[in-house]
Length: 255
Image (cartoon, rainbow, N blue to C red):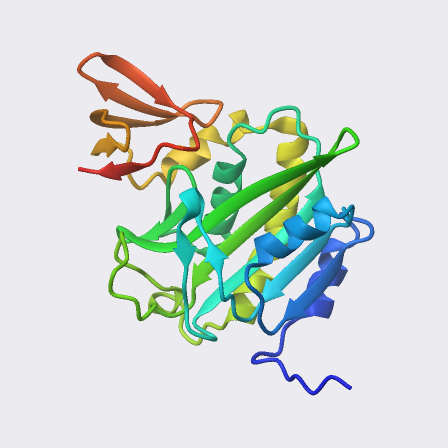
């Protein structure tokens, strides 16, 4: 007998009903604690499990962000989930931007995007995205991990000051956020798979938190951010000319 009781009442049935018509075979799993929801779905994918699934972790002990950074949070203060889907886009370029755009548009008009995978609110980090993929037998499987601050984390050593959804959404809870963002996220993933990023470029640039700012990249380039191009590459106007950055190993910060 399982005596575990969830911290929240999750709207799993309502989310399932909204999504399963778009994604046959879709399921939802809520876990009280796990090392990382992305790590778990990647383990399953490598073992041959490629079913569409939404995996929600009430607490992560080894949450991961981009470039190997950790994602920490107290129980109930964050929404952390991963979505796994069989996925065959014509072009993967800009996928993390499309995911971020969907989340930002669902959460509100003041939520901005920082290339390539962060959500910002008033120049502070609200959340992040980690996308991983597995390939087996010519078929690919994508895992889209999302971490959002419901309340501000207690950590004081963050690279970027933190923001939280409860600063602009009274009475917010992790289940309410999950229900608000999931259906739109699924729709965005399905749309991106067939259409790519190009038609999302204008919408992304309208929410770009660093467009027009002087920025510096981790590989030493500096200049004015000019937004993203039709493939999702970041454009920086440097003294040497227009530089386009699309490497997953490069980070960019305001000067």
